[in-house]
Image (cartoon, rainbow, N blue to C red; front, top):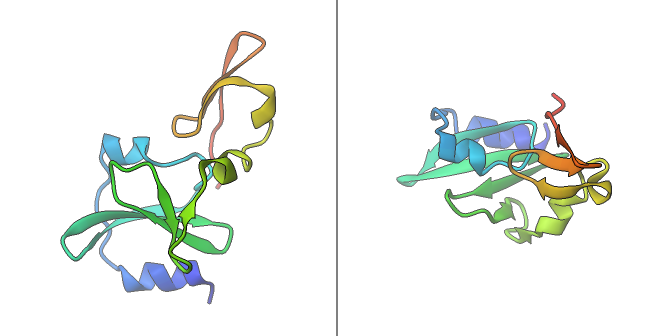
Length: 108
């Protein structure tokens, strides 16, 4: 069982996401959920085989296993063609390429 599956079991009750929650999720996270942890709403997301967590509206994500913050550059480097676009928004998945608007959609 990968660590992500253990987290899913540990937090069986999932909360409904708000717009603010969705705006706090980088597009590199394909699997995620929201749970209540000791009275606080926490977002959990899977990145490869690892689990990340975040408390909205904070934009910083933390690796669940190491408790170290995940650098923004680490997340943006996972986006294909990131270095070929301008006005990139990691949370909305929008950018410009040759003055044209483009959008990334998560791969599930």
